[in-house]
Amino acid sequence: VRIIDAGNLVVGPFATVLLADFGADVIKIEHPKYGDGQRWLGPIKDGIPLWWKVIARNKRCITLNLSKPQGADLFKDLVRRADVVVENYRPGTFERWGIGYDVLRQVNSQLIFLRVSGYGQTGPYKNRPGFGRVAEAMGGLSNLIGEPDGPPMTPGYPLGDLISGIFGAYAVMVALYHRDFKKGEGQVIDLALYEAVFRMLEFDPILYDQLQTVHRRTGNQVTHVAPSSTYKTRDGHYVTLAA
Image (cartoon, rainbow, N blue to C red):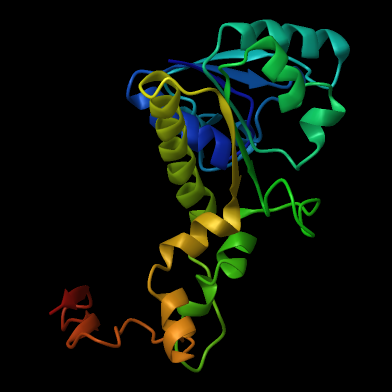
């Protein structure tokens, strides 16, 4: 399976590294001047960004300026021999560069095109930029983190991006199964960051729909299980317990 990773920063590259870990041939595209944003983020050791080493592993890196006609033409040449393209730019960006799905479909009708954005390719929020932290709030996760009398919180880690990356890799596998084993066609996967986070809440939507109850923050405790919390021990460490 050949995958073109045309994403940037976290969610797109995380989806592709999961697939690369299991043997996919991933071609990573970076801007000739700026590279992927992950190359500049900490933590850094001896001038090497450690997160980049993890999220770029098992990939073959090349540079292309997709916003230039020559870069777009070279990109289409790559697509002819690819199974999957992954991108996580703001909706409309690839269309502006002349490499939207309508164009790529003419190049390769069997292509699977994973598009990850903050709010999806359609709808009133489609043009808004999106980050994992915002998706955690929009998806309802932030409302569950923190003390009951405190503000909503986030993990201090791009959890929304990573959740979406897992859903993206899963969706690609389902699309490949549909294409190759069910004799289907290529297709677009439209994945919004907030949708992936919202799906992880599982019973909260039906809790509200059926009982009109909004799940609130409870700190380290769990409403239906006791004891269930994190407890400080006499030697200054912590133990977590779920009965």
